[in-house]
Figure 1: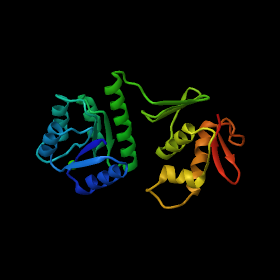
Figure 2: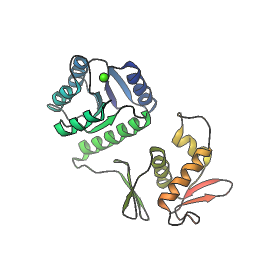
Figure 3: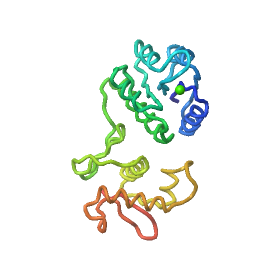
Length: 229
Ligand code: CA
């Protein structure tokens, strides 16, 4: 199981991040001061660090610099100020990702997973390689969470991406709206399966040549949807 360290002095934010990450199966510890976070980063065996910038005692810049001095653990830096994010990038401290508060916890979880997958692959194979799903002109980079339709990069929201990826990874299988809802939205919202229909429509607008005659995601009337290969 992957262990994640959250270095964050705002208790409510730290707790929210922790809840979401634990629901996704991660083991999580929180440090609410910079000096404590630095010590835990250097002594603990964490797989990933979520690092707030403004912290009591020792700030996020210093922690990032010190941790990078001895290890390659993925670091996601978070700040309330967009300007700070630009500053961190400029400094080249070696953080792997940056997020501006407030952000959606599910987006954080998605990024954590992507960085862990990438890091594990890097350390195990020695060669960084992204996890790619490719079907008839649609290329999905699961690691970078990017999609290309006929060679052109197309933007998907988090849920559209998750839904498209799930269907594409399980081709020629019919899923009911209820099944898709459970798979993609699970704990986050309660029972409006019309959400699935709306998202399928949005995905089709992005991937289909003619949404009236879908070539990728078929509607199986009275049952649900199927990704055709
Ligand atoms: Ca702070």
